[in-house]
Image 1 (spheres, rainbow, N blue to C red):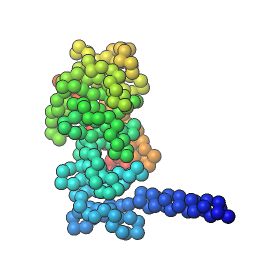
Image 2 (image 1 turned 90 degrees about the vertical axis):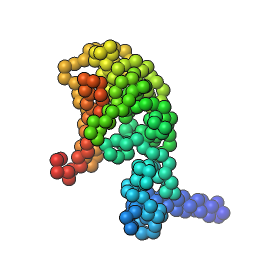
Image 3 (image 1 turned 90 degrees about the horizontal axis):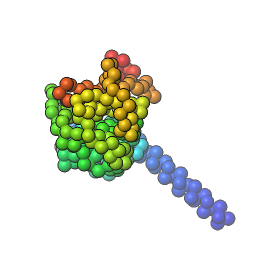
Image 4 (image 1 turned 45 degrees about the vertical axis):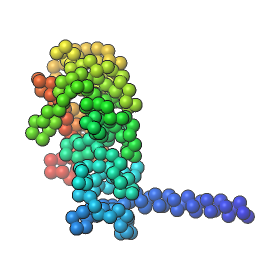
Length: 246
């Protein structure tokens, strides 16, 4: 009889824990007196309004907010745990489970829980594609209007562990697509494979980015442009089904 009672107790305890996690996952932002905070589905205030802007909590337990310093990700105690790299006037989107952040002028990567996966040590590093991120050393950022461009220096690739898999020896580098990437070497564009081996020269018609559709029908366009002066720019467009330009 004691064994049955103990099993029932464990079952009820786990059920309460699961329901509690589910309830916390439904925290929603609300606004009061010009500031944003969070409350649960019953309306109880969980985090007092103190942010300029607040987004929904993820299932992993972090949320993007804006405070007096700028964009940041908070945990469920309302504490900023990381400052994301800014992309297209917002926090860098997660690609292949990682997003960029910046510290002391260097770029690193963190996962969806806010944990730092790759320490910040790169002057610039692009979002991951097919397990690789193009990075540069001694490159510099220039602004054209509201968009930033990184130019100069040497470019190479890292993997999702932050290991340099292709040495920084190129004048410019683009994302991997279908197992190959375009890089510029000695003033000429060539294709390399994921081992860094040259496989072909540049084609006449080069892709300007990629497009994908999410489960809810949202169209996502990731575009990249490069000028003859080796300036590289990235931008992201999202078109949900109710968008006027959908």
